[in-house]
Length: 347
Image 1 (cartoon, rainbow, N blue to C red):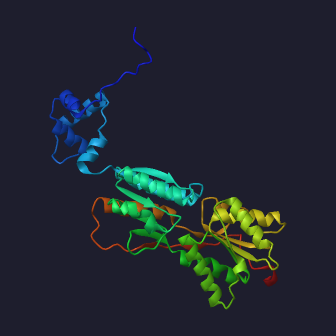
Image 2: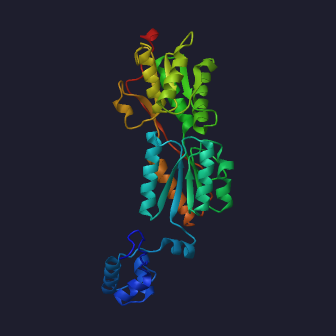
Image 3: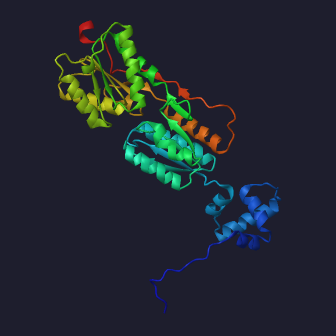
């Protein structure tokens, strides 16, 4: 009686096995699997496909990669899957890649620069065909190992002239949010921004400052609070603003998650929205329209960004890009809902 603990080593079904079962050459099997380059008659194709099914044959992608110098894999480094916008980018991007036969390796960095560096090295070792990255740090030093290895790379949320990149018009986004509140009569407008290394936060902050300057309103650093990611961070940032001797009548949050945290802090202080404090978010996540009150927010083109990033990277991988690449800046828009209203003094 054999030792049941000894694993049974199964012989891998090869292309030769399929060819023998179907009564054709291995070249014909390759033509069927790759849909070319030579035509195969319907009857022969049917025999080959039946043999593949009966033998439960799967092509050896490792061997194929050695021949073609392609692995049909794309790396995606994303900062925070708890943020619905990043998840939406990943879903859209993955859908586009799968349609072209590429597998997406999803890497969640949690806004950790060291984790991003480790992922870059791991993807380089895996010899992925390309990488799409939304970095939480200056991107050029981070992606240098990929560029040195000849791995095509697309950077999200940065406006770079030397590297393929896709970003939203965050300068305009900051302006739209501030101009909306200014039009309602607010003069004490606060901003909850991300850490200084965030390129998106820098552009939105600049848009906010531009609107204040154009309206002749002095910039007050006390009204700008830096925050980490997540609901708790938004809650804490809003507490700092409410503790000011002259608290703001309105606040712009870097994203909808921070805005939701800020709304909880406002209510915890016994204040109303928008009665005492108006709130503007950023992203227009799926839940923002169903908050109480529904959140005024800047709509971020997440689905479009994921799709455009995948299409651009696949064009680079497949060497179908002929023209010089320029940064692709996607449009944004303001969605006005019930979380913003004129300040009490103006009613």
